[in-house]
Length: 152
Image 1: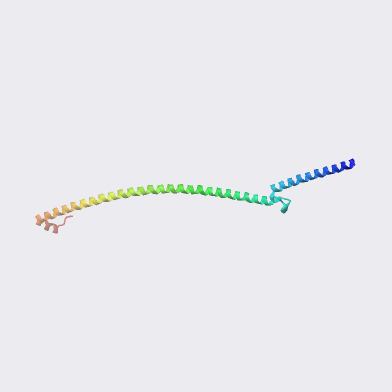
Image 2 (image 1 turned 90 degrees about the vertical axis):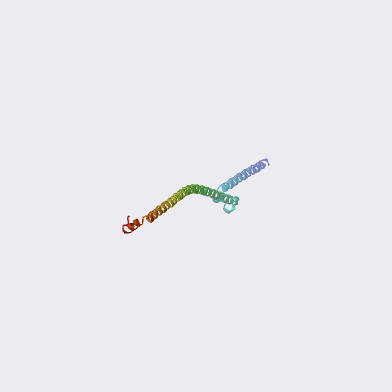
């Protein structure tokens, strides 16, 4: 009986070894199917399929979010550039406004000066005219002479 018992225990040991090999192969297959979720030979029976799809979706969402962050960063840079450009434009407008204001003030001063000169000249013309009329009143003969011989 020892021989039979010995052969039974050898067959049990080989079965145990075979089971261990199958378990290891199954484990390796599961790990492989997780690593290659869409190429899994188990197909719809893959125990990791749902997790793999979720992982893929999460990865895709993260990539989309990264792309959106990069797009937004680029947009922020563009907006900062536009803002800087607008600031320079506003500064230039303010400088031009100051120049226009100074020119306007200068022109108003010149206009006031010209107006004062005109008033002064009108006063002088008035005085000269008054003096000329006074002379004509004193010398009526001169008045007749000027009528017939106008001087220019």
